[in-house]
Image (cartoon, rainbow, N blue to C red; front, side, top):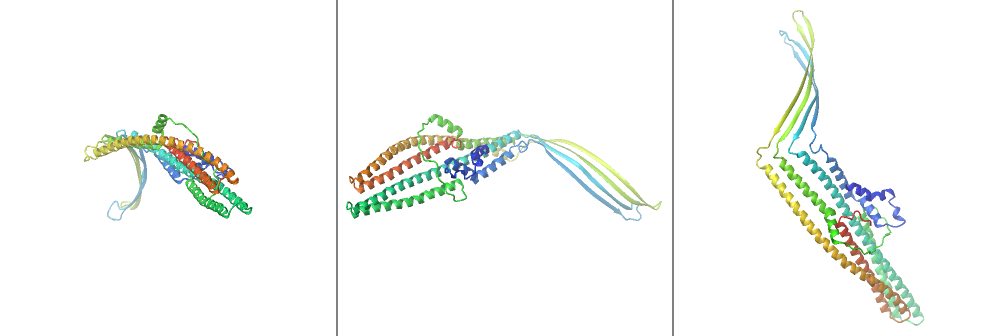
Length: 448
């Protein structure tokens, strides 16, 4: 069931206050737990899942008899005013239909009960699968938003680092000018570099804040709270076995599992359509009890007295009946239903084969993409180390007057660009790994 899975994912979130991450920062696991808890689509899907569970009973499948109880009363008043009639007078009475029971039970309907029960079980499984697929999409959205915010945060850190270097460069050039060792041109150039870096910082702050708003939206936050991201975007090398991944994908991919459920439901629809050709045997039985009381008043011409008499009766009835029906001819309705259900079953089976081929191709593409992205990440890791060391040496040479401010500024730009390239490469790699986890059906069990 998807409900226990989601309760497990929410478990830690319910044990501790929602603001508990405030001291240590918002981790990716925190974001996922909060997002799953706040997602309205998941809450609606859980309700639909409960409805499907309620419907999955033998009674809903038609296995049990129907029993009806009835109780009624009738009041009667008769009045005769003919003076020459021996029955002249007034009578009144009460007729009770005491509790009556009617029982109807379909004893045989072409195994329709068993097929319907299996169909209801499969519908419950389908509802469970829809919830799981929704959870997967929600987790994917949150992880993407979190990683994007981490990238923007890291880029902001690098730009601020470059801004501090430019500020030091500007101050240093100003001091050198005051001592006659630098020109106004060099001071203006260093000032322009500082102002450019300051502008880039402000623009990056806007990107970072927008990324944090997107993360809050993905988490379903109703308030515009400030978060501090605790997790970093790190790369870890992991080898994948194609055969193992393919086997897991064909077994656990939620979209493929949902298609198989749909195919099974179409098969049950075909079996139900075939039951219309079978005879139907129904048992009808019941009992009733009717009691009546009459009070009669009439005039006796012989004694010239008014006579009163009370009469009563009680009737008990019991019946049992069997009815056998068979659809002899209906203008081809059942035949068309069977033909259409058979076509839908065939269509669902073809859709499964098509989905398996599509997923297999997607798995191949993802693994190839992962390998290329790993190479890019390894190259950018080496590049950032080279550029960082070059920037440190360049600053020493610039202070010693061995290189110009233009050369040093070029090193700064290389450092910013290489860091951005590195973060983008890791981000793309993480998204590909995320898609791979979703493809093989492990995204809900993965520890982020």
